[in-house]
Image (tube, protein in one colour):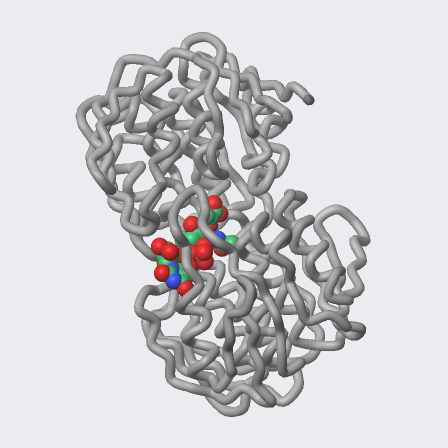
Length: 417
Ligand code: EPU
């Protein structure tokens, strides 16, 4: 297993370009299952999770062509398998998103349930309930969800929580259902809006994506699409924290600041100097103050930036109360940060973070994707060397991160196993 070694204490300086969004790309690649025509997507990041999604689609019989880096054409004409195995779904939960499109187009599907996860239970009950409301007959057999429906029917669906994955699964199913589907209390994330743009280009009628109520007019048949996915707002936010936490001067470009409003406002409140233009943010960090943070569904503060923000709060002036409202076990990084000298007290879904003058490098272990990034960030601000193991988590979601940080002047290297 590879390790990443960071020697801290360098002030980051320069420019970093943001890659395409992992969490937008995954459902969008899967949406190609809705048509037999070719779908070309650009801005697809080179990540382990993307490879897993392409492997899943190939296994179903989708033709996958990767013409050049970042560009992929998918054609789901020869789909001859309607199953996503436990092996794939357990390595990447987003695989579960094939359920809706497969049932909608082929009338049946068999998809493994994902099981637990390092950051929380993450059940799929809302996905299942929504599809059942659209007329799918659903059985849970040997750990697999088996769904059948001659033709899905539009329905009015209320989500008990604004789940991102559920909203995506149901939007894709509804795009080929008969009639109109209305999703109430839908997720509003930027990635949902990007998926809606793709479905509309394919011929569905999606309105209201980005608000709590989404209307989807199903089409009898959907067509091919060409689309570039949005920039990764979580990578952008992570790079901004890297600039701020090291007292640096960093321009994060090729991003969408309008997808990060809550995060940008919180950084400002913490005293980070930010100059924001339409596709870039210039970050200068100096004299960071503690602020309280509560993660919330979009447009609230993203849970996927909580771990990174905890590093900034660990070296801020004052005490910050960080509340995690989305996942019940998303503080694993705190225990590693404590080993690096952070003063953090965990109380249920709250972390009380008292800023310290400096962190000190240590061997630490990554437990999930965003936790891995927080440990790299901690390594950048710490005195001495931080050795991060289990970086395969990082490779699931950050494209060429050590190169990007290295170009900003970080002393960071990967040690291959
Ligand atoms: N939930 C249920 N039942 C369901 C579905 C969700 O109770 O059927 C609960 C979950 O347990 C969780 C909450 O609802 O407590 C939110 O989960 P959601 O479904 O919104 O999350 P997700 O779709 O599984 C996506 C991202 C995550 C991100 C969350 C929240 C992708 C591939 N994943 O997950 O990204 O944290 O939304 O914004 O889009 C990451 O990139 O590191 C990552 C974990």
